[in-house]
Image (tube, rainbow, N blue to C red; front, top):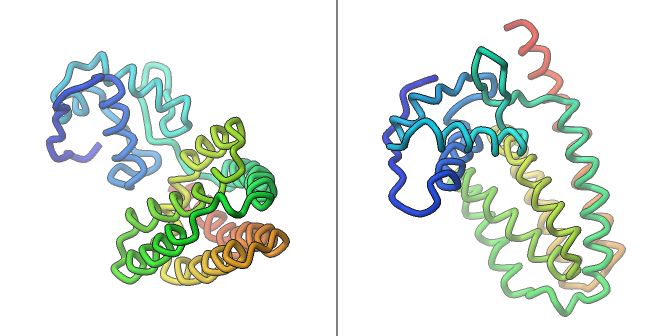
Length: 229
């Protein structure tokens, strides 16, 4: 694992804070898929003992972010076409369901905030601030999903978005991806503004159709390159 900048844990629940820091390293691509995570180096970087690091890594294993190999160590989990298909198929079905319920109460969606978030997306895209862009996109969509007021769906969707974060980060570096997505997100906003349930659900379908048509080939290329490493 590459040498990391010191990131000491200042206070709070140590295991949770360590998990948050390592998760941040993985999702920001500071450590790459397939890279080994050395517990002693992480402990030194974070200013803690190896025990909370070990427990934090176990927690991240349940999130699919790291993989344990007996007697060998821990690596950042690889991204793959198969995992992407599983995560995004579940996301598509649940997001359609959440939007269906949200559309029954469009008045619960704060359009002013939604519009502001879309503007922040455009600004982040122009600045190529990928981390901020992904953060705002998530807030934008969950503002809509929360209008469904379906706690179980929201909880599962939140977990699926966590799992898909590495894929979103990977795709965001491709220059033609973000503008195409922004066009779809604008349509989502317009559907909410017009209170058009059919248009909203069609936008969600189109977003995932774009993923299948444009993003899947990128992942297949990645899988091919991975096999030759």
